[in-house]
Amino acid sequence: QVQLVESGGGLVQTGGSLRLSCAASGRRFSSYAAGWFRQAPGKEREFIAASNWSGTLTPYADSVKGRFTISRDNAKNTVYLQVNSLKPEDTAVYYCAAGSFATGSFIRSYYTRSKYEFWGQGTQVTVSS
Image (cartoon, rainbow, N blue to C red; front, side):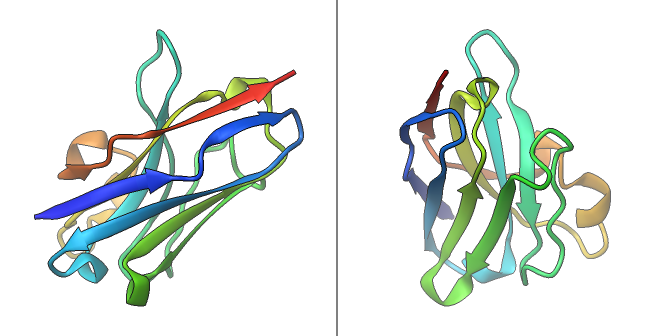
């Protein structure tokens, strides 16, 4: 089992930045891939960014590429999402997730919600115009 707790959300103005954190507890978190998803009111939860277990593969959704950066510190069991140049359309609840992808499958399915077994409760990000 892996427990995930997000933090770092808040209210920012357009163009602002935040650093979201996802603290993990439980066994062998360093062996799990991690992902960030977000869900805006009335919309489905969407993929934002992911990291394989080592941080060497970090794919992003087109909507955030160049503005968001995912990183992880396995020694601290923590995954981060640096969010820059925020826009009102980035307003959402941001969720962290962890998944034990089979070898070679991460790059084919990192954006698929059902591939992640463990989820946090989310942290709210609100961007004012």
